[in-house]
Length: 374
Image (cartoon, rainbow, N blue to C red):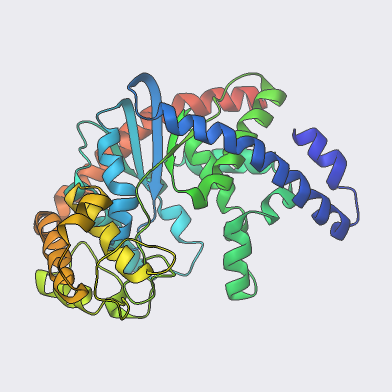
């Protein structure tokens, strides 16, 4: 595919190449989409030989949306797959300016949060990305197989470079490092949100390109898509819940106290209809509360709505707040306990890095031989 791509685009006028590349990528995305649906179906069965990898940036304590959208399913994957790896991807985080001391603290906060949510270092490998140098080395090799038009059309670059009116080389090549993270461990399955599918497609493409050039080596990773509904902002239900939201009442964090949670849910934007219904298009605010309630309680949306019969939205907010408090309180207390033991967290990440290195080193040895370094 890479040879076809380069022949078609790299030697044309850039404006023409961009238009044609967009069409090409769109067709590739459509064909890959069918593969992802199949991957979603197979993700519910135990696959002893499968290898799962995913990463999360150390941007502070996760919020409720992170937990329900990703971390809860990460915990469940530990029981379904024989090898599960979760990386705190600090190399990715420095594509945006970081305060070094804050970054160090955020790495430990994320480690504590993952452990508190149920990531078990006896059933999975939890490690810090920068402590395994092979990630960066493989990223360079894969970057030499990637064309610039291919990266230019990925959402990470288009979104963040527009926000800053420019972007760093690291931001531009971010998806290549992401592909290296996955391929370094010959990962077969990657839990992702739909907004990351195009980046996973790049990892698939680079596995094929490498295999075509150097011989069959990397498996093509498949997506494990979560069925969990996206959690919306409590102040603007048209947007996702976000750590960077300037409105303090918009986001529920895993370390919020019960009083914090009650206040945020009570102030959540709804509408002027008192009845509790689930109508995401016409009543996004109330529907967001229903969706969160269902997710934290383990009930269906229909069951939650039925239980809310006879309540107005004000009364229902109290029920939702209580359900979220019950779900997050044990996690909050465990994060506090773990963060008080910095030495334990540092030791755990060091042991995780040793395990990750033991898997990455032989893969990179073979890659170096295939590429011709020795």
